[in-house]
Length: 232
View 1 (cartoon, rainbow, N blue to C red):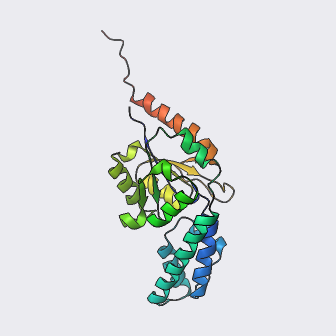
View 2: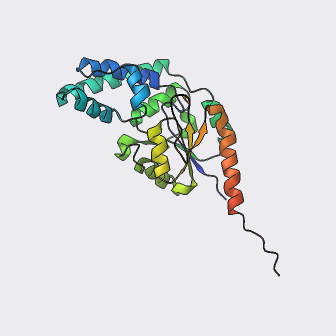
């Protein structure tokens, strides 16, 4: 029986990019008159697509000229790319887990642009684990919490949803993968502030991932084993 496909989120699951992202997002949004603190991202909007955040802020605080928004986003992403290349670190346990699970098929599924995913993986030395198996919401034109990004990745990789294990720290990604019909592991690094959705498996750090994945794989194999009949 083939091994399941592991679909990893990037920001907050493999790399510790969210504090940098939150800071640059707050700086950019404030320059166009949209009140936003880095804690707002880490609290209310973690994992959400940037334009969804902008749209929500505009409903609260008023419309901003589209051209001005575009210029701000370009400047923000350029500054973020520079910081990712120079300051980014892995989530503790991520590299060890990827080493332990290297025999499993895997891919990255992220709401971020593909250039950002590549920058993050290259800066942290994780590129070789995934090669070109990177699936961006911007390339697929579909973002979490919709299930289509996970389904798109699974389809291209040649797997049915039921044969995939998604690993994500953000609730938008957990909900997306659950809706896609996948087995979902929620990396819940903030268990005091965040509840793991029903149907997902909770772990508190990435060091736990290999044991969880191996257990799930063992259970899949057991379930697939034919039951031997005693009848002649």
